[in-house]
Figure 1: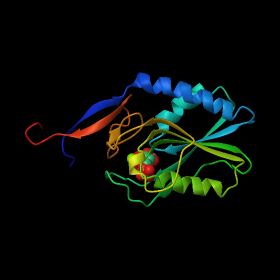
Figure 2 (figure 1 turned 135 degrees about the vertical axis):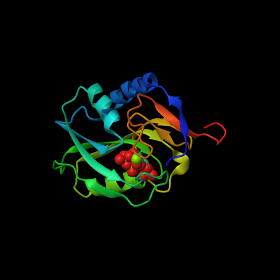
Figure 3 (figure 1 turned 180 degrees about the vertical axis):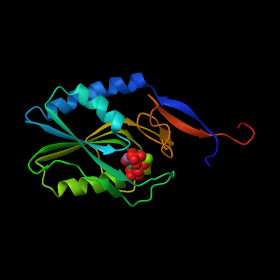
Figure 4 (figure 1 turned 90 degrees about the vertical axis):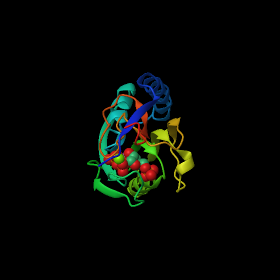
Length: 182
Ligand code: PRP
Ligand code: MN
Ligand code: MG
């Protein structure tokens, strides 16, 4: 059903690893006095990023997941965020780090932060690997960003196009082929 496309590499696996190492140093400083940090990954897109990130954090951490969905199989945000799975643990009074793969319109992160904030964590911080600031439709901001990227449809390193390409080890851009190239 999809038009044929190719994927052009935008950010290499090596560049991602180097950036995560630098970000983890900032996070360790921010949470150095925390007993046990709750790291919340937003499924499904963040599953690769959170796996690499927590292994760089030599801090006591608890890993939890929340599943939110707004794109489905399309290329446009539905602007309606559905919580498909909530976190398992209590976060009242705890220090929480939300891990997201990409901020586009910002609706997903805004909705999730609003929900988690209502549970009265002591500290709530956010990290996103990718940020497309030109697409923002909300006021949401992450505390740490891996890379700012142009307005391209990206896949890989956890991010999908209609549920495909999550398993690519790098971040790539989807480029649709013209009929004569396909
Ligand atoms: C994607 C992506 C972010 C969100 C960003 O999730 O993983 O969570 O969209 O877009 P936004 O800033 O416009 O809300 P998606 O809804 O595709 O679910 P998935 O993570 O399961 O792929
Ligand atoms: Mn997502
Ligand atoms: Mg998706």
